Image 1 (spheres, rainbow, N blue to C red):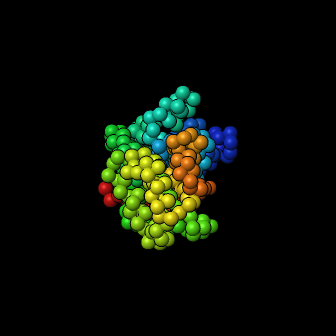
Image 2 (image 1 turned 90 degrees about the vertical axis):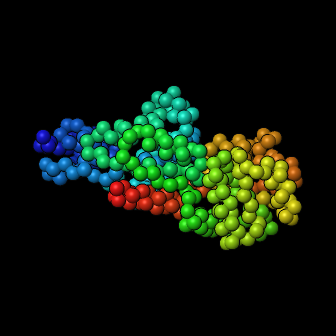
Amino acid sequence: MPPTQVDRQFDPAGDCRGGEPVVGSGFYCIGRRVLSPFFYVTGLELIPVKPAILLVAFGTSADARPIYNQILEQVKEAFPGHVAEIVYSSDYMRQKAQESGDEKAALSVSERLRQFAQMPGFSAAVVQSLHVVSGSEFHKMRRDAAGSGVPHRVGLPLLCSPDDVEAVARILTALQPDVPASEAVLYLGHGTRHPSWAMYFALLHHIRELAGNRHFMAMIEHGRRTPAAMAAQIKAAGYTAVHMVPLTLIAGRHFRVDVSGDGPDSWKSVFEASGLSISFFPKRIGAFHGIGQIFVRHISDALQGLNNR
């Protein structure tokens, strides 16, 4: 039977009214219990609401989470009425969360989807990748979601279409007006063995069309050129200074250790040893509104796919 009353005293953090969420949770107060984020209360009628949105990131330390949270807020603003959460695809990061007692952050994509599926009113979900390219982690995410048996649609990573590549190229070139024309600009992608590595160089092509040939691209992992080889290429092009721009949403371990670290094998150390002067772009690309809007567009496409089932 439908509930006959809404307890306005249910939520100690605020006044809980019929059809209004428990503060900070996305859930609704019905009687003396939280029913589900998937029902909206209108009088005595329970109306199923919109698909859930899971933003799937590789995972990172606490210091970098504000960027993920910023993208989450953009998604919530773009899709009011949808429950939106962040889930990590990295087994290591989920294990660390489990050890620290953060049970929710320890859940995999399939585990969270199954939890949602048990809630009254759930219909489907969008599983939105927060990866840069559709590499190994993206396809691991897809397999995990498919194994849940829960209705869902996958949202594509940052770089998947010509429109994506052009949009990111325009964002990146617009962010660097203060880099002297005499300096090379080196973009550092994470890298992947998956054929999607070619998207990095499609991006470089668009960047060079917009801003010239002083722009270069390399991979932190699985790249064709080592840091020493890349430094030699840039020096051969006549540059003595390099502005590095990591193509990662957040400043994770790769940036802190492999790129900007003081160890002898970091990109910074190898370039400096070759005689090049190094500077870094001060923000990660995930901090920029335009990047979040590309993910918003991909979520919109996925929601449209759910509607067309």
